[in-house]
Length: 193
Image 1 (cartoon, helix red, strand yellow):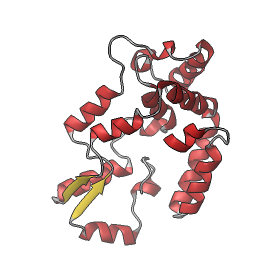
Image 2 (image 1 turned 180 degrees about the vertical axis):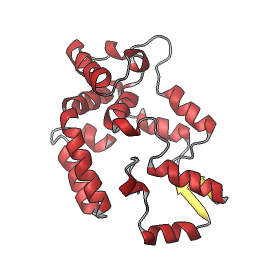
Image 3 (image 1 turned 60 degrees about the vertical axis):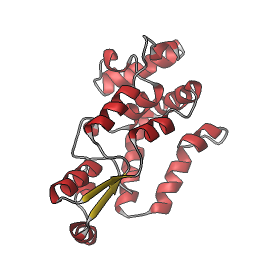
Image 4 (image 1 turned 90 degrees about the vertical axis):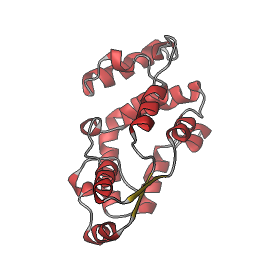
């Protein structure tokens, strides 16, 4: 697996991985970033018909979310006000420096594979990804979003831990770290994370 980050320690492949990649004839990733697929994901990220995120959330929860998105990530409310909760959750969960970057590992590998003329394959289509992201109810998505906003101050520390474990190739440590972030009393985490 890959981390969706642009940290050079991640994007610079270890020699053994670089060697295998350079000999590979095929490249498989989660979803190919074809223009129509990306357009479908972007369109699916937004409510249609005037629905607003703040109408799904308690006023104080929406205010906390706005503080994170406006003050810390510098995103205007017009960008996220009609986004679906799962899409906003992705914004909150992503390091700010990687939001609009095409330098994250997945994209760099894809671009290299495309330049080399490798056979390119996606494990999922945009429609399959959207179906998975929309599988929790709106209430469950809002619950996950509120949980992430409440823990936002810990996210940088968690990302550093995750990055360290990833660089050590410590899969068990990554699983353990993810389990530590989950609520014991909630099956929502079990189904969505």
